[in-house]
Amino acid sequence: MAEHGGTLRAYRSLLGAQARSQTAYRTSFVVDLVGNLGATVFDVVTVLVIFGVTRQLGGFTLRETLVVVGLSTGGFAAADLLVGNIERLPQYVRTGLFDAVLVRPLAALPQLLLMDLPLRKVSRAVFGLAVLGFALASAGIDWTPGRVALAVVAPPAAVVFFASVFVTTATVSFYWVDSGELANSVTYGGRDFTAYPITVYGGWFRALFAYGMGFAFVSYHPALALLGRADPLGLPPWVGWAAPGVALVAATVAALAWRVGIRHYRSTGS
Amino acid sequence: MSVIEMDGLRKEFTVRVKAGRLRREKRTVTAVDGVDLRVERGEMLGYIGPNGAGKSTTLKMLTGVLTPSAGRAEVCGLRPVADRTRLALRIGVVFGQRSQLWWDLPLRDSFDLLRHVYRVPAGAHAARLTRCRGLLDLDEFLDTPVRQLSLGQRMRGELTAALLHGPEVLFLDEPTIGLDVVSKQAVRGFLAELGRSGDTTLVLTTHDLADIERLCRRLVVIDHGRVVHDGSIAELHHRYGSRRMVVAELDAALPEPPALPGAPLHRAEADGRRLVFALESASVAEVVAGLAGLATLRDVSIVEPDIEEVVARLYLSERRGPLLTPGG
Image (tube, rainbow over all chains, first blue to last red; front, side, top):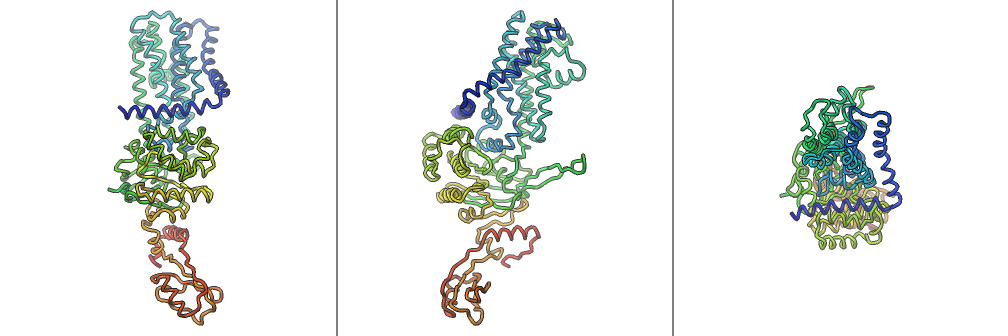
């Protein structure tokens, strides 16, 4: 147990160092905080604009759609804050930070995440979770104990799922340094996919993102279960409760991909 | 048990090279090609070789950064990749081109953070830091952010950072690269002091052979991923025929070149008033005594063989195949 306490303290001091470095210039940090709100606010405004011209989107009303948006935006913003910077892995390799981290007595991934935690993204995560809270409160959900439980586990499941996507796509750069564009198309494409009821998409595209990669379980199915709506696409209602299980599978895939990737790590010259 | 063991250690990289407009060819490059080596506790080992010889790759396999393609490596009885985090507590690593320090924070803060990372008791940490502060003159820049330090100051910080957890083995990859003369002296002096205590095993790769001459009794030369020499510096000189020279200044030239047993005349300069003898089996005293019987000596000096020249010849001979016969 003392060993674990020591490890935790080690991680906490890494986080503390990162916080001190980032907040050293207070004004620029505050500007960063506000500036970072932009993209996330824009995502939500887009949905409101769409509902300015239509009453329904893929068969869902504004209040219902907001539950989907909230799960997606909140989950993504929190995952982006916690593990999003892992997409800078090629940079860590180039600057030698990755080598430096590997010769320390701590796991490599948590070290990288804590040493480069983008605290300015806190504002986005807070905004995303606020949207989710507002959506859940105003969607007229018939609160049964089951739905309360789902409302508690679905947001963390969304965070874990997005975090797993970040890590898995980043590991591609262990083999292929210029994989950034491909990784982004999955990560950000996935985020945009989850921001709307999946009924608005069609064909193979929907099949691939929704069930091939599992993005339907992030926001769409949990939202259906919370709202007590049947799936227009015909899946049974319990699918909404599969979110934590799917997130767990995603996390396992990410952990495996990371372990295998690290064994294939090539370092750089000298 | 040796503190470092390598058996048939090998590392291959596949690289894609352009072949034609669109086609890319896969090619396998062997960076380390079957290295067998034992390093005993307290040894100071110089690991040298030309660029791309596989020095850094070997070190990265020993520290758990790279996974070997084949063969076995063991450090402190642990497997570097599988037991990476446990091994990290027992080794120190200084990669000249990589930093263990926090760029935006004062040097002192990095040391404090590393104390938590390595879970070092406060007392032991303070004692080691005090020792490094004295030996490496850290005090004047201890409160300066790392990004403002000169390269020499930063390297002294890196050395300290690698030692604060009291490692059994210290790996140094090019620790003096790019340093000015004064900083080089400071780093060498510090490492020599560290080696004298005999507790820490030291493995050092370098381009600067003065590092090796000053610090290491044992020298391993690697080229094209293979060990081409393993022994003392004296053995290297012996094997490749470099010898110490005795330079004798005479009052007047001798009528005929002197024949001294075990020390053939290498060359004569200044119209025969300066004679250079190569020391083979004779001692300096024997050469001086032999000459004193023949002429009046004005001055005698001894020239040590130049290790750079020896190593350059070694690399060349490896390239061309074993042309040079030992001792010849």
